[in-house]
Image (cartoon, rainbow, N blue to C red; front, side, top):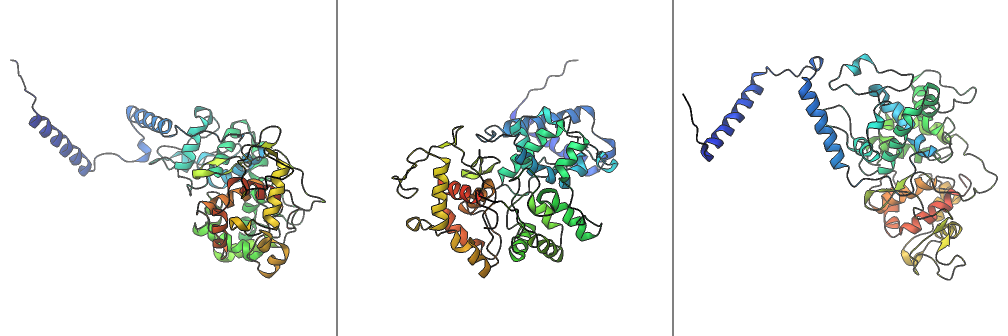
Length: 417
């Protein structure tokens, strides 16, 4: 006996409605296993991973390592290392630190990364770290306005498969505390050891120099206000927010007092101009290299105009990095009144800081760090202490060349000058 069925739009619609009702009935029944211990059926697991891989591949199109930024840059790798130890090791493990049984019982279980990093392109790693993966336990970066931090994590992930246990510990924990200053196991000592993974016990930062901002000798008022801002999420940093938000105000105050009491690193003279390194924030929320257009000969191509630099300068267009530093000194010491840019030293100089401890010193800070803060203010993405709002209208008036110029000049000065 042959049965014939004529397909009509009405029958297709009814079939669709019936399938939807059946799916709802299955969900309502509670018979579908959601237990992590049972895992997925093999076809389901394959489909989910295939879909995830395709989504990451497609949605990361258009992302690339910023021009001039090297993922093998030791300072960039260092920026990601301490954060990985604090926030990622619990799930993924690390050389010498196996995953816990509790983490491997998740569904899906977070993979050990040493053998998986090579499966992903740089752009895909960036997308995963920045956005996370739904239903997998993989969180997003806590802020979407710090692509420079995400690239630092990608740089560390690229280095991870090459590390043995000693190499990993050297990066993730840094150099040990000086004699007599070691952590003693109490809550404060534990918190301080966490900070020291990146900033060192002395606040000068773990090597290489310039990996992280120098916090030694900053006023306790400034440090505490910004730690609170990080903890509350009003100052954006996917590295600092998780680190600060686990502590109460009393602990943050003790940490601020500790680092305020440290001596800034001493140098007999200003540093020499070197190749730019690290990653900073750029236009449209993208990361970039400080002095991103500096070529191997250190020549900076700049669109010059009367409101950026005196075109009669000895460093005429295009000028070298020394000329950029000269422009930075002008901005720092005299400002650019026609551009409504005040002299930086009017607030950040030693005399002004002694009158108002909420102003930080800028001299000796890494170039990438200073440029990132100015770019965040320029994009209206930067808060902080009680006077942070003062910087926004100034940064909005600055060109990228001016931001890079003043950042370079301050980076060349002895710390806390």
